[in-house]
Image 1 (cartoon, rainbow, N blue to C red):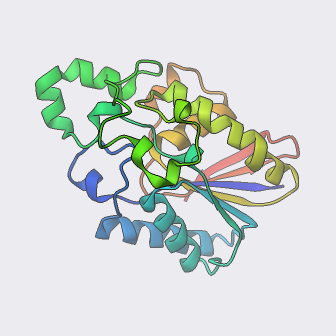
Image 2 (cartoon, helix red, strand yellow):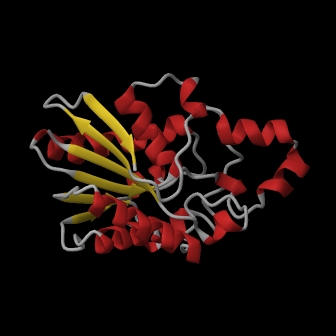
Length: 228
């Protein structure tokens, strides 16, 4: 019975400052590092051993994975990084203070941008200096698929091909898999594997640094779910 573990990265420096982050590459805060290490200790206490790790190409998720694996004595396992597990791209909101954005656009509008399943935030143009099109880690992507902003629906659409191509085959082969990623990329995967409705996924939160453990059957149906 394969195990699948999700860990949302520990608190980031921009989480601490209440800023929209998205694809901006920021580091973990001191608290975030401790959350990631605590996740690893919990995994060790639970006796969960992994065969494969996946993470995004953003520092806060990569470091969370490494801290958790080091604490659980499994830093050596195979690891793959992919942009498809990146956080949702918050478009032109990236770098903006959430409270200031609410004062400018109104609480209701910002709430819709943050929580609606299919409403896009204000988009960031490809020629903006903050565009991911200018980031070397995305240089091999078709420029047409580098986003200027995403909602959860679009995030789901880019995450699922990676699930189907890499993660699901590992699980079907009986491997235990750990994914250290972001609130929205993990919410997208949660929605998919738990078959959560568009409306209900809006109420699902991922706590920073908390391992979510799924036991799956040989058809990847969920047998048990536990938060450590």
